[in-house]
Image 1 (cartoon, rainbow, N blue to C red):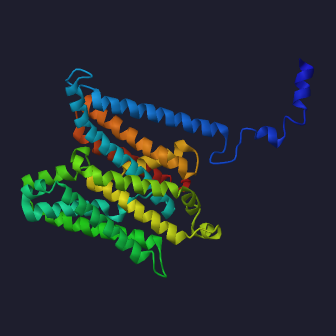
Image 2: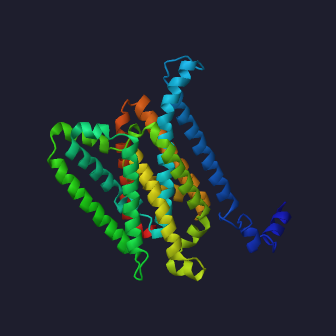
Image 3: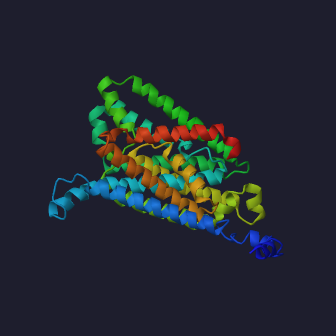
Length: 355
């Protein structure tokens, strides 16, 4: 036995680079174990998401299981679950793509003024038309108006700041922050002129919640999200190159400005749909993007974006199930998500040298 041990120790094959790196593979993952870990995590996320979805649809359903009335109740609950799926995909894909194009992992598409414009629209509605006007504005026409205004705002910024000779991504982000701050100031001024009851109604509307979504919005929201997500996913290989920076991507033959503009327009559509559908979710996309970067263990967007979307859906469904059936506080789901996301954001800011 000792002879065999000594022979193995002094074997020229045992310590060769090929033997040491036998686990390494070429492709999106650095090793077979990384690829295996990715699919294990995806399976766990799928299982948790499926259980949470089943719980939201069937748990505490007052009707006998399998009866016609049971499915009627479940169908009503499906509307909220559908909204969670739309928001999860929109926020996750938009945030990952936006961070790649801007080459910065501590910012989100929300800084482009989507939340501020959403707040300004609803504040102006209740300011000029009263509480009854805000309640009556919860219809398909208002949803379309919000979508159009948010997309037009983004297109105005992109076309003005990214298509000229002196195109500058950082200037665009700065202008977006300034526009958002200006809209926020106007909203704050109008809110101070409201009565306490009107302000209370407005505050409830400004919290992000799936209860703000209506089934009549889905024929417009779902095709927009599916088309935008598919186009971004098909552009994954270009995103991999864009993440290397402007100079490197241009040296590799990728038109950085054109592809960045295309991705940013699609991101604007996703964020507009999500915000107009349920309200602002500032830190949800950031939270799931950070987790996806850590758990996916790859820089390939073909794998990062599906995991980010699945994490977002799992977070939303599990959070709503726990808050609705365990803590009986469904209205605070968005507050809890924003709190956790904000804490993670501060942690990333403090450790930004390691991003």
